[in-house]
Length: 458
Image (cartoon, rainbow, N blue to C red; front, side, top):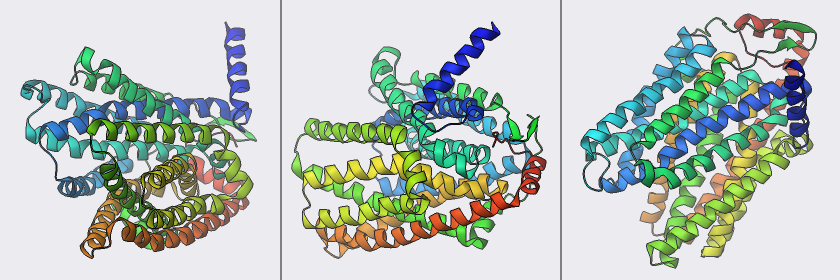
């Protein structure tokens, strides 16, 4: 039996090494992280079409108000999550977070079954609450996953492995969407909530059984499963963000990305709306865009992400999307037509998912454990949604000035250039901090162990 198990592990390692530069001692953690992300995002993408359906069938059309509601919900949720970080070890508060959302889904399941009527899956007030809740759920489950990854993997490992781990999430998003498309009519829309709950529970079990590994290449002792809580203040995420230029720059990078995304979303809506008159034709072109984005993302994550970060460095990788965005918005300003927006969206989103997101997660591998869970979560949830609001208001301001699609596209270029400069600075600063961490040697490793870090053999 052990021979068969050993042979299976060797085949798994051999398969993985064909597509990613992974060390033998990293194989188990890499595959586990891959599976973890798969179940997390497949759970959300089962719900995403249901969220949009609920919004439509309940008459929820005032998106700015929903965005504002989501922002307020994020402000409430962050200290609640931070209180878990303060009181419980990582292996408890991470699965507890997913189980909390799973319990929420069970509540929504019974409420929607009780209030469904006709073509609606719930009362109008349920639709508003569910839309806002799903927006919070989406960002939190993804952020918590990457918080754990930044804690598990060191900077050098993250540069090699995060792209491949991201493939698990991409495949999960595709699978979740397919499950809803295939089973919605057979099981009923509301019953899909239970499928999402089951996937979240699997993700929670993966965290509990996440493989413990030796602390260092020269230390064969395993990291304890039960580590002490991180502790600190509930508000440490906010205060650290205000005190640290590095974390503030990451927050600025996040805001500038979301501003550009909001601009491009409105540009896409305007151009597609004017190019096609029927809902069917609009749906078809948006589906083709999504397919092209997912294809580019998977290919990039498997074959390019780790190699590009290692070959060209983190600064160049983080600068790539801002540079592409500056060129893309310029092209859109010159030629605001369907072909331009199609190519720009596919390249921008594919590059973001395939390169920029993994590179951004590398930035957090050199901050303290407390900041990895508190400041990082705050940046990727509340700050992200704040960027949405700023982008929407800025675009509305441009429209009020009569700039139109072309003028708004040109107006986005300065944001992209500032974003580019910030990306270069962040990449260089992360490299400096990682080098300082390596020079710290055994003392830093001992400090991490004392803090209860779940680390992978270096």
